[in-house]
Image 1: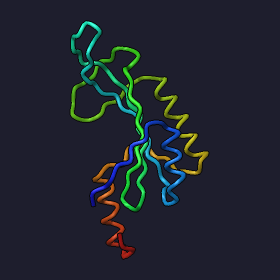
Image 2 (image 1 turned 90 degrees about the horizontal axis):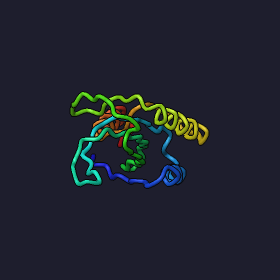
Image 3 (image 1 turned 180 degrees about the horizontal axis):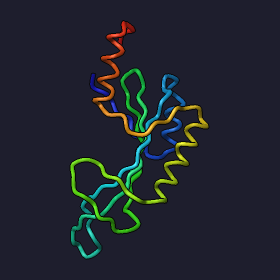
Length: 135
């Protein structure tokens, strides 16, 4: 089942979107280290370490609600280049993620580590259909 993605520009907009959808109970929260091309003030393109925090929630009618914030890492990191998101040691991002987790829990949501993906949703919907509850 293809899922529509509702992108939210701010965390407050993400929370407001969740509040307007009464079927959402679980929010997944993740932080990733990655590298991305960045143009410097001199015009050179470098591969710069970045940090991203992502919050996602799946709504039963087939919508994925997502907020993400990315920024350049505070310090240079040695990053093993892979196709998957990597770990990082940015204490500010870890603290912010925990603050967001607490905020979501105060709002009444269950919070788990990770991020909703199309594969997760497909597995969930298949399991739901097999249980006889329909999609």
